Length: 468
Image (cartoon, one colour):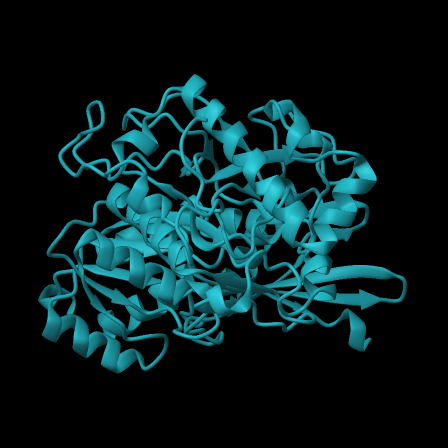
């Protein structure tokens, strides 16, 4: 057998943690030409042959756990005539059933758990704003694995022992707050568990505690940066890194944040259904997020046909967990659209990288037969000088046709009293968007500070079509 899998019992009454029994991390190993340590050299720089052999072994054991302990998976696997014995290569992955969000909802709350409840020590869930919440559970070994995975991307981003990390994610059922908390502690940072909101106290603690690392959503980083600028205390802060997640962060948005704060900002990826943050994260080269392939297999498929797409081509991310004990998932359809690359990264890590999520299959809207993604609108807006990094998209229906409005804040210098200048600028923004989207939006320029700010996930799209 290659490697070790925590789903297999190894001692009476419990499991052995992969993080404890597996490779030890090394904070002294440097990537090729890099200045940031690699946290787990063995896990992150493994040869492809060895990694794929490990993935096959862990996939087989995950299929066995799902078949033996999860009724929904047992029925789906039996229907397809595949069990753990038939998993002999990664090619067999495509024979496994997809898992969807509906599967989590129909088995709510614990129907996808593969361990007894007395072995579950923590649960998290989605907000449930669009239906029954999605629930993910954790054994003690799962929490240990989670901390290791977050430590990987935190270390890759530049976090080191002695940093002061302020977590401005919510501490609740959302996985972000606790996941980052565990991983940052594992690295050796002093964690300030502030949670979301209370911007003035956030700023006060950043000054008093000497915060060097900020963890929050990209939109809240912008909002907090504005508050810091108004307070005139930027020079009193020691902030040097930002670890941002929980919502899309385009390169243009990241550039705005880095410019405003004078820091290095990195992106990371995860979701409640799989483990939370820790699936992937950027290194200092910021050219895609390194996927923890010894813990997850990531496929990219055509969202309509379900067929695989070639490396480098955009498609829907599908994730299979390899080391999750409590709630393992087989081929989970994330609805997130991205692409992957197998080109080697200068940092020395050998894992596949995923690029930033360009949108979701469920947030795309169609206007005049054209597919439009909010992320594309953001990317265009942030390249236009004179616009502030705050916008909202309002979807409306006029008769049988869908239309949309883009409201975006304008630098206060442009509100100089000359209406003709504003009208001309509005035409410029409209034409730039039309050229990129191939459909013409209605653009409304608004004063800086007039759009609502969020202390959690920003609400970028407002759908008014149902009320029409």
